[in-house]
Image (tube, rainbow, N blue to C red):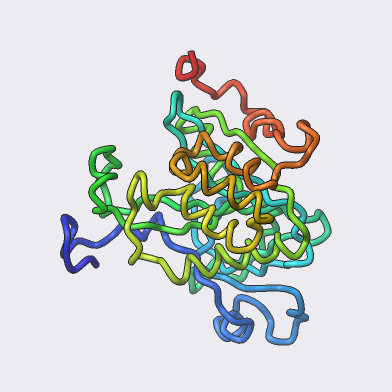
Amino acid sequence: MPESGFFAGQCLNTCDQRSVTPVSASTAAAYGYFSAGEDTAGAVFAVNVSHAIDTASPAFFCAARIPLEGLEDVILQIEHAGGLQAHAQLRFSFRPDMPVILVPQRTGADRTEYRVHDVHFSVEALAPPGVPYKGDWGFKSEYFQSYRLTSQIVRARKMILQDHHRVWQYRIRLTAAQKRDILLGVLALGERGAYTHKYHTAQNNCIIELFRVIDAHAGGGLLHRARAAMHRRTLFLPTYGPKQLKYRGLAPRRKNEFHLPNLESELGWESFIDQTMYQ
């Protein structure tokens, strides 16, 4: 509950937007999410990961076992709402034989496991329930930040089925170690900044937070860092995200390996896109 500012004394909407929190293997076992005896080598654990069974079911929070060795791709996604209006997030894709395992956090029910191969990290403005996002407030540092980790279905149905937006996808050129470090970096950001960091449209928004983690673990050489610094004034624009990757030398050389099919095309959901936004 904020102690000052416009939302002082009001509860934030953590029923829907809860920040991911890493936990130890022993803590995950103590709550019964995962067995204390199972092999935890190469895996990390987190709670407050949002998942839904299908496109019509409500989302619920889960504990997650995330196999670092199974991480295949880190993809920058740009949810495009027309013009310069957009939102950026990261997609982490895992090998078919090494999925992320999710176990519902709710108590009093039989333990169930869900296996997913893609999780999405999204930094979003957070306010009390029912308070909408307004552009002018975004420049006043009144909103807080939430650092959400969700299964693909949770974010995809919101972006595409509900909001009818296109979702661009760009593979980031990284070593295996860099991929793991970025994943661990966003988990740490969720723990460190949850409900304390303030959102600002041009100084601390969705894409700026992502690139802070990317730059900490895969910033490139001196020349690339210099180019990125020269273009820092456009970093707050999610639609410029692909260019920011190129400035840092993080774009695969082949175009078809960098600019991937849009998420709605990958899922076969093209018919849900509102084409009038892009005319």
